[in-house]
Image (cartoon, rainbow, N blue to C red; front, side):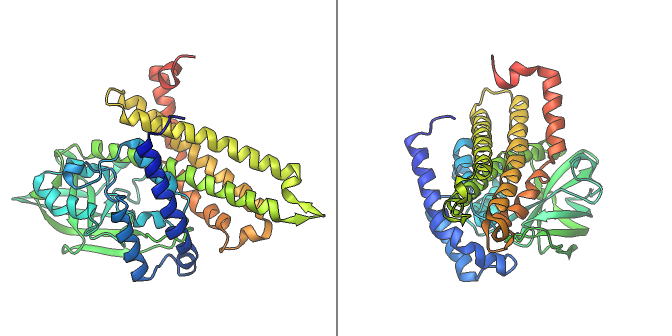
Length: 387
């Protein structure tokens, strides 16, 4: 593990206190209300988020964000990952691709999003395009100074919270990204599927029917949309790994505390080797996952690093941390026994919620393809150093 600076340790302590004292107490209310929270409680979280400087974490300060390093973002996301019900999504963290915005777009979209006055949602996935975002069928056709967008998007995470979308579409010049305001004519939310988890965010199905947007709403260079999406994927995969580490740490703490007090056959179950082995395996795997995650974060911060190698390291962190957290959640449910099957129990919630981390922003299988491809091209030493 890399050593944290004094400032980073202070950041970690600040987020940890916020998580324990203000976010975790909201979990059960959100769970029992299918992910909903009272408006005044949401407002309070938003106020505290800005007070604690947790908004806009991946956006440079000159664009209205906090400009945190990747290590610092990982510290924040790891602590937030200890909270169930996706309450971490109340922290405004705009898509990293927004750094490609021009001055006008920064004023209209980026700064207001960092400040919590607007909210983005990335619309990529389609019925026939999931793991392969290049296979999208949504099209944008130039018409004078405007573009007409047609197509369907699935699993648009935070779609219920957003007031605009970053839409990936095919153009005659290649894939491009567009800012599309939610209230634009032709934008139709036609389904809000219920998912296995009970998150504060929803994952909508959205239809774009002759949606007219100005050319001023093209994000970045026309035809480079897929490159921006890949950068977004890399950042999100690292943040997933961080949150999985946080979730696993919370589960280990909760399961350990329960095992020490749960008495069966005259002694605490923590005295039984079967329980000890589950806890030992969980702690060991968490140690490995955290080491990989922070190593990948440090590589992201290295301006001289080969980004293709960084991509592979991030994929390794996401793959291992997400699968590790699922194993830890399964063991925690087992340790809690019947209690672990109750929705009011943290292990039950994480058992459902962590499953998606092996799917979204690139399935475990996609991560293995990325890792193997990089290994075949560059060899073992390039990825893990001299040995």
